[in-house]
Amino acid sequence: MVCTTNDLSAWKDFPKGLRVLLLDEDSMSAAEIKSKLEAMDYIVYTFCNETEALSAISNEPGSFHVAIVEVSMSNSSRSFKFLETSKDLPTIMTSSIDCLNTMMKCIALGAVEFLRKPLSEDKLRNIWQHVVHKAFNAGGSVQSKSLKPVKDSVVSMLELKDGLEENENKNMEKTENVSQAQESNEQQSPASDKYPAPSTPQLKQGERLLDDGDCQDHINCLIEKESVEQEGDSKSVETTCAMSEETLQAGDPQSFTETVIKEEDDSTDGVKSENNMCPNSQNKDTLNHSNGCAEKASSLHNSHGTRANRKKMKVDWTPELHRKFVQAVEKLGVDQAIPSRILEVMKVEGLTRHNVASHLQVRSGLTLTKFVSFCSDRSHF
DNA sequence: TTGCCAATAT
DNA sequence: CATATTGGCA
Image 1 (cartoon, rainbow, N blue to C red):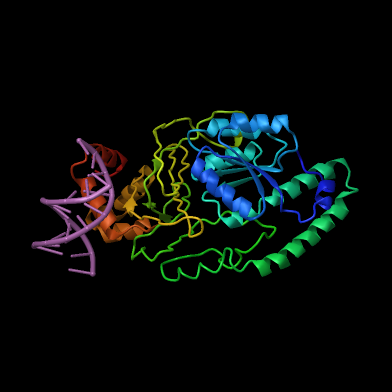
Image 2 (cartoon, chains in turn green, blue, yellow):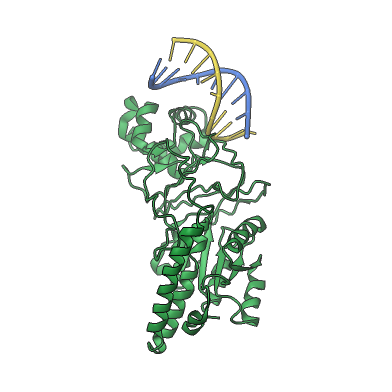
């Protein structure tokens, strides 16, 4: 199933016609990805369970060049199994969850890449790279004879592609991040979101899209990764933009992965899956008290294939966020623990003073559990 | 304007 | 029913 260097050199307009195995249990997500892929002349074979997918690749080796596999909290072990089983196939893992543990596990198990959902055209367009890499690696290990010419030809293909894409790129992506001008800190490199450059632009971490102008003021639909449990670094809240919500725990105590990944199997398996008409993927976060893998992310679909993003601007007070909150309160001291200062100390983007205030209110007030946890977290008194 | 609280909404 | 948001008031 690996594409050889010879195949590549004989491949006329290379990325086109790439056969992509798409494994995603979410049929809507699958359909969306499929349509995007097909828009760039990839051939997509969709599977909604790994058994079918595995049998497909075993029955017909060579049918696929690359696989995109969705991993979620509920199917992680199966996804990992697929990943391990299909070693010959360059496999891209994708997920709407943004857990570093899961990511690392995927990579450790041989995934060529981990892409966070939603999968933009940019990300999807680049997947052919892994086919090339695979071909190089496969051919290179045996003999490097044919490698060079192929490399050259591929390089020339790339350059050709570059030119082409720049020309035909007018209506596609791009041209619309102009709309988001205002708003706070947008970092990243906005410039290079064009076409497949050798480097995959996947790891953007704070990208915010406000396509309809309905994001006002501090209502933010944003994404950010949260590093471990340090203080002083900025984090961001996920202001819920939609309705589906899931809790994840990638719990699959397996193999060597553990050497790289510190993971606990505390499966909080509360999976409420409600599918809505509005394709909107959503986040979750994982928490690890002892070791602290705490990421949170929210993903929302962007302007492209997705319409209405109903933003609910509901702050999810995750344990981590609460910890931040508590830390801030501690740091400031009881006397200084006023919403605005807490807000500052927390440095959580997208969080409003009101959010903090009401949370503060809840904390100090009536919620039994929170109050207890607050007290236990607190060192003074 | 900021903080706090009650009412209301999800 | 718990918890987050809204809105009003000090």
